[in-house]
Image 1 (cartoon, rainbow, N blue to C red):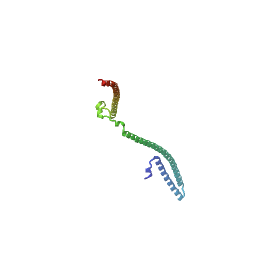
Image 2: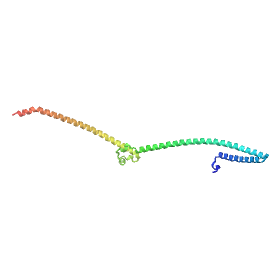
Image 3: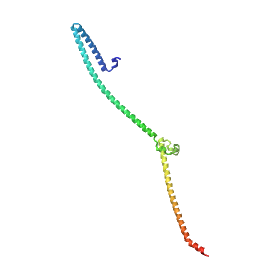
Image 4: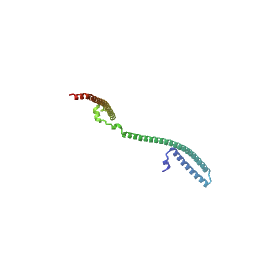
Length: 210
């Protein structure tokens, strides 16, 4: 592929054009120099050689200026490219950090969703039975209904605990009452034995009477 088909930057295209122009001028100057060597140099030929030399020096000077500008532009482009690359690297690193954070959060979400919560082990009544008892929650969402069912279970257990405490108090009261009666029976047995012992002399008198 020709060089002019590859290079599209205007400043570089100008460099190529001036370079081609200087090359053609150099070839023309060489031809004139060869003519001057082969035959005596005329005034016209000498003037043409000087003219071509001036054109060539002008083109070379112009080419040097374009080359200097091209080098400066290349350094600036290199600096801009480096800055752009650093920005791309920074954004890429930031994207990687976001990706790792996303994976971490997805793992946390999965762990939370698969966590064996204690409330799932509670012997709650079914949703249908709960809604039949509390129709005011019929329009609530799933989470609200679950919270209400747990609260219902808590109140049920508190009521049962209160009943248990009352039954326990009654039990303690009955145990104390039974103990008191048992003690009363034991005291009655002792009094009866004392009465029998005290009545023995009287029985003996009755037995000895004619």
